[in-house]
Each structure stands twice: as C-alpha cells, then as structure tokens.
Image 1 (cartoon, rainbow, N blue to C red):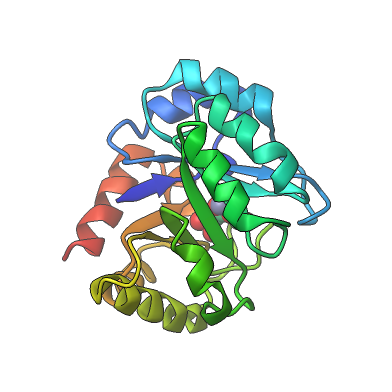
Image 2 (image 1 turned 30 degrees about the vertical axis):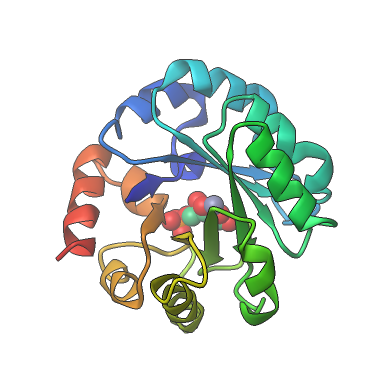
Length: 214
Ligand code: DX5
Ligand code: ZN
C-alpha cells in the first residue's frame, strides 16, 4: 500500500491534491503541535473538511503531546486510522480500545530511537505499527536505514502469528529507498516529497508502488 503524505502538498488546494493521488490506498495526514515535534501543521478542522473532500481513507499521524486527550476526536472526525506516538501516550492500551470503539483503526508509532521490544505487548491492542525512518517533524529528510531492523523484527512477529499488524514506514521513502523497505517487510509506505514534489503525483505514486511490489 502507498499512503501519500499531504505534508508536502499545497495546503491551499488540499481537495485537488487529494484528487491527484486518487489511486492511493490511504491519504497520510501529519498532525503536529509544535511541542512533541518542532513544527506546527494542521488539526481537527482540516481533517473534518478533508473527510468531505475525498473518499480516500485518512491515515492520521498524531505527532502531538497528550494524544490521550485528542486522538478520539480524530476518529470521530472520520479518520480511518489514528496513529499515536508511544513516546507521548499516557495509557496506550486504553487509547487503542477507545479508538477502536470510536470506529477507527488504532496505530502506534515509534520514533527512530525507540526500540520495538518493550512495545510488543502493547502492539497486541493495535492495528498498525508506524515505524519512523526520520525524526518526526519535517518532510524531505534522509531515510534512516537502521530502522529496518525494527521492521524485520515486527515482520517476524506478524509472520509467526504473534501479532496482527499493518507495518507502515514513514520518512525518506523514495525511488532509492522503497525497495530496501519492501524487502524488510513493510506493508504500507508513506511518501510525502517523493509524491508531491513530482510533476505528476499520481504517476509518482504508481512508480513507487511498482518498485515496492517488484
Ligand atoms: C514527518 C512526517 C512524514 C513526512 C514524510 O514527520 O511524519 O509523514 O510527510 O515526508 P517525506 O516522505 O518527504 O520524508
Ligand atoms: Zn507522518
């Protein structure tokens, strides 16, 4: 699966930018609060409007402090998947249950330096695992290949039946990096600049899909 990130899109034309990637699997929406990460982006009103502007499932990645307070509202706003950071969540098990009760998939994200092993029990409550392959905060950064060990470990846990998860990767995914991520076992590739900096975002996403399934 490919999830273009609108962080690299034109924020004044989000409906058109979503339409430009209509063959995507999910549309990735980066919510940043200038506290958990050193950048500020968009929040609930934009997600509510996007929900009306596109049929694509919205994959909301909350890079915010206190997701326990805010995440459910994103589910209620129509997000398909709501991902919170394990480094920020106070009660991640409760949060996953509440997200599912609100009708969304529950996602857990790990920053590049956060190990997988202590999160394995938590992940039994989650539907998606978002492995960050850059420090969260900005698009257009370089891929950190060292996080692929985490992807491989998660892949093994899924393939041996210990966990049921969509394994997502986020940061620095482009034509030069997507194949190694695919080989490590990623199911869903978030790509911001590689899609939206291209002259034809729809064609760029299909080229990435082709590389990932090669
Ligand atoms: C970064 C965001 C990413 C970002 C990826 O913190 O979580 O989703 O949009 O951008 P690229 O694909 O350009 O690295
Ligand atoms: Zn993201």
